[in-house]
Image (cartoon, rainbow, N blue to C red; front, side):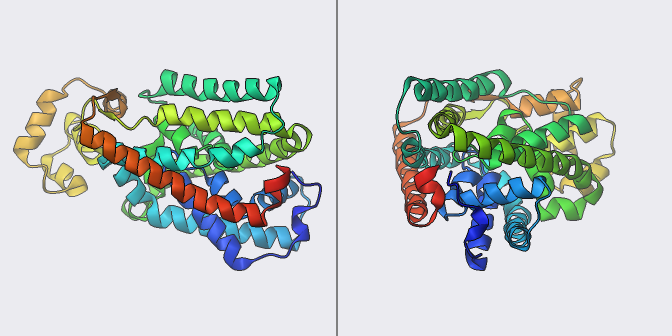
Amino acid sequence: MSDRSPTDEPISVSRSLAGGFLMGLANLVPGISGGTMILAVGLYDRFIGAVADVTRFRFSRANIVFLGLVGISVAAAFLGLAGIAVSLVSEQRWIMYSLFVGLTLGGVPELAKLCRPISVTVAVAVLTGVGVLVALGTRFSGMQLPETMPVLVVVGAVAASTMILPGVSGSTVLLILGMYELVIGSVSLSAVREDPGASLRVLLPVGVGAALGIGVLCNVLKVLLARFPAPSHGALLGLLLGSVYVLWPFQAPVHPDLAHKDVRKATVMILAGSDPEEVRAAHGDEFDDARLAALSEKWAGRSPAELKDMGDALQHFRPTGRQVGSALVLLVLGFVLTRLLGRREGAGSPAAGAG
């Protein structure tokens, strides 16, 4: 990190809006780091410094304007593209994950440069980062946390904190914790229109946690990157590499029908005794009496939490040669896209040279 104040440079409105939009878009998709995107457009140093200053009540017009521009564009990406992101992750998992793995690995070269000089401490930091994320993926993938307010506050804090770490995806953390569909789905405009109360019951505690998480982490990160730049970036590199394990493309739902949100919610309603017409009004005319009867018989005795857990459960499958070839093409494409963005960072960000 540079000793120069991030507010020393003039604000670029277009650059701030673009950086915020890319950051928001990236954090909708498991595997893409919003921190990497804002680093790529040369705003990472300024972002960390501005948030750290505001949380210490060191207000300035430049910081408020800058964070306002970034915040508006992040919100625009969330509201406009959240539904599409959830749909793609649910319907085209192996295809999308192949692309996401490439996008994630594209951040490796820039982070690796920031880990110099290489030492035993840096190596331990990298291995620790890998181990933490692999352990999280192994331990929590397919599990469902209770959807209570305290849990949502903690989830918001953790996910938002990872949003600002280069190479670490907030949505990956949500996916690992089994909260991706709930949180990201609640942000979409369609969800807000259909049931604003339900969306707010999720978004308010998550938002409170997000504000706390970002504020705390920016201050901690500012200190760590200044005092221990190489080991700190080594830990970030390890987290990035560990996320590739979590995003292994060739996974499929154990129960494909429950992996679809509408099917699962319709099943919950019919098991709770709702009238078929009520189910169709909420989830569409495709749920005719015969289909609802079949769902009721198949999943009788299951609680909503059990159905959600079963819908999130994944299993590895053996890919065909064509799938492997397609996955490699998508991986390379994602890698190249991230590297193209990274080239811009090298020319404009003080973080590029100082970390």
